[in-house]
Image (cartoon, rainbow, N blue to C red; front, side):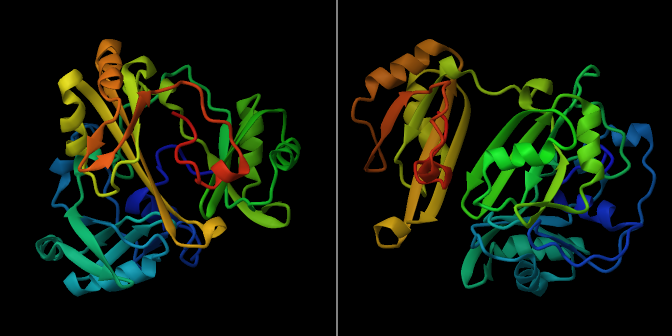
Length: 346
């Protein structure tokens, strides 16, 4: 398993993974490719590690959005090569966004000035990467993200065959120790699971065998699961009692438009918007888009007022459904598991 200091996201992860290891082909499933030469890392002093990312040098990364979900890292790299030398690409299928690293700052400025780039026939948008959301670079000794007494006993299993059942996963990982919980998540094109062991030693035993694991005849990859929100200070989820659930708005609706429509009932603390598209094969084909959002107020009275005042609400000419957010997840069916019923919990 990788050391905790290496976070499985972004170009820095790919550089750290490839450094000092045998050459591997680009992993298209994970969606990470890098240039042939790994950059030389400079040790980071404790004072420098604590500094915000924006102070460490010029921004050499752009954020590319609104691509096809099937776009590969190679296609994205080729499309952005017109702006300058590309040193790294992060794009995971089936996500519709990715990051592109350049060798020169001038290439970033040229890409941002263009505003868009054509990738696989689709016009994607370009923006400069927001370093305020970036993770510490490799070698930095950031402050601990979880309490000292937190013990992780869970792994995430990726690339699972869609026909694999929960019982098959439980039985397979039971050979490494006592499995206390298995959560299977099914998304379009992707099936993964969280497996929780009784002890950390059992989890480590499973991770030690991660190079050659197959479930139902299909190779899977595993890695240590990130701590849940409740275990990380400052990452607590929204208060359900103060939240409302909105659905059926237009897919191009901006976050600010939703805020403006519901801010009259009270101060909005957070907003989470989701848009999901899928091929509706059961009804003759075509693409169906589901939209929903969670609006969290600072108190439950505002949430009550928003629901009571919106018997037949509209936004940009589209009729919405507004309800109180429920803490109970929607039962997982085969149809819902493929994303056919919007969010699986409200």
